[in-house]
Amino acid sequence: MAPTEGIPEVAAAAEIKKDAVAEQPKLDLPHLSEGEAAKVVKQVKHYFTDANLNHDNYMVKSLKEEDGWIKVTQLARFNRIRQLLGVPTDAPQQKKRGKQPRFVPVPEEFIQLLGKTIKEGLAGEETLEVKEDGSAIRRTVEFTPSGDWYERTVHFKGLDYGRENPDLIDELTDFFSAKGKVMLVRLRRNPKTKAFKGNVLVEFDTKEAAEEVSKLTDLEYKSKKLEPAMLSAYHDEKQAADEYIQPELQKPGAEYQSFEDYCKAHGREVPAIQGERKQKREEPKEVEVEIESLVKFSGVEGEVGFPQLKELFNTVGPVRFIDYERGSPEGIVRFRQPIAKEVVEKNAEGIMMDGLTLKLAEVDEEAHKAFVERAKTAVENSSARGGNDRKRRGNFSGGRGGKRGRH
Image 1 (spheres, rainbow, N blue to C red):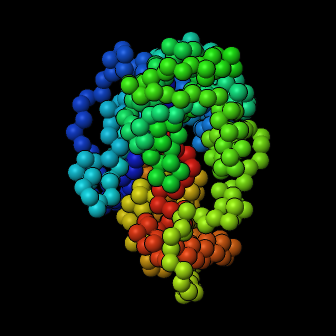
Image 2 (tube, rainbow, N blue to C red):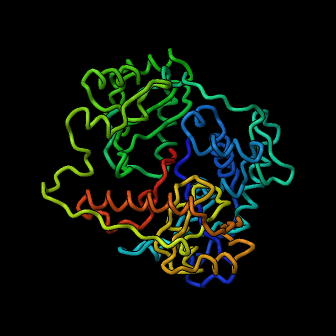
Image 3 (cartoon, rainbow, N blue to C red):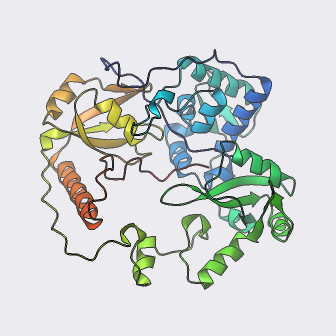
């Protein structure tokens, strides 16, 4: 079983406004059947496997902190875990067109159930250990990255573009397991829209097993004929055709051009600006940012996104921008007024979010200068695209940002 992208929730802060987070929907009392508990434990174990960690930068980074311990509250933020627990990621009434979904916090009783399920399910497990109170998990052996997965991976084409369901990876794992022992299934996605491309990467336990499957000519999944090829062969075919090699196809340890450099080397425009009118554009306006409007925050854990942070900080003052990259422990919020000193003083003990305490501080001159430079770059990029960034949600990394979609 493989994980899906984790989206954390926002918990109420001190003196938080009533409408700042989604109202907690009525959920059934937490209970997991034996089969459901087994799925949760299998999913959690998967996060810590070598096969997953070879591709999961977020988990690898997290394992380097807190002496390797991953908190249960952290795991509870992942979409797949929320799904298995029966907790929605956002309030249904917020899914109307034009409204930003409000993320639903995971209730404490569900987190306790997750901890209890993990502790019981991993009892006697040699590769993982659980804290006595069931609050965190870690590997018993340090993870060492390996590129061996590459020669054991088969690329499959043939599924429908954009069509997937929450259980697709599980279903594909079961399907391919009839052909050999499956270590990992990854869905390939459009790098811009994140839509499923209809192509799948399947890692088997041995090179020989992968090669046997790659030779099959009659593979069908739900009436869809699949076209298998060893990943190395598929990679070489694209390289011979002088096509761009996307990150998930790249050989471990090899060097590749960035997509931007590839386009420049081939005399092409980067797709983000293709088709725009050839016209003289106005020079971007000078960016002015008052240092008194900037507040640094730290202490973030998990894959917190821009919507959650904006929603949280809007409870202490009107937000203009949030400079934050998903997975980072810190960032900078820019308020619409010069209220940094006031915000920091009023929240001297920090501001609460999902059980975490985010520490706040005024920025120094160096951080202010760096922020202004990033703001200038954002304005210039927007100008280069003819102003098409106006609907973006304000942070420099492009709304949700981040590179850790997890499959």
